[in-house]
Amino acid sequence: AVAAASLRLAVAAAAVRIAVAAASLRITVAATSFHLALSATSLAFALAAASLGLAVAATSFRLALTAAFLRLAVAAASLRITVAATSFHLALSATSLAFALAAASLGLAVAATSFRLALTAAFLRLAVAA
Image (cartoon, rainbow, N blue to C red):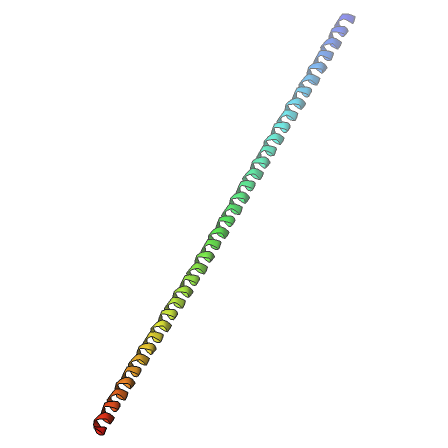
């Protein structure tokens, strides 16, 4: 009877040890699953942050590129305005020169006509005097 009771206690103790080991294994598996889920979540957050960083960098690059193109367009427009103003100034100078040349030519023609008239008057006086 003592041997049977001792056997029953040994079996019960073994059953308790098995139950404790199984519970410990379940806790270890649950902790490992939680740790893996936590690692996967951390990885997902890290990937999302990296993706957001890349998107922000791409947006910044696009904005910088747009600003550079805008500066180039403004510079080109300024150059066109300068060229147009220079062309207008040159055309104005050429027109002024043409007017000055025409006035000089007219002045020479008037002087030549006056000289011819004076010469004709002198010849007429000589003819009358003769």
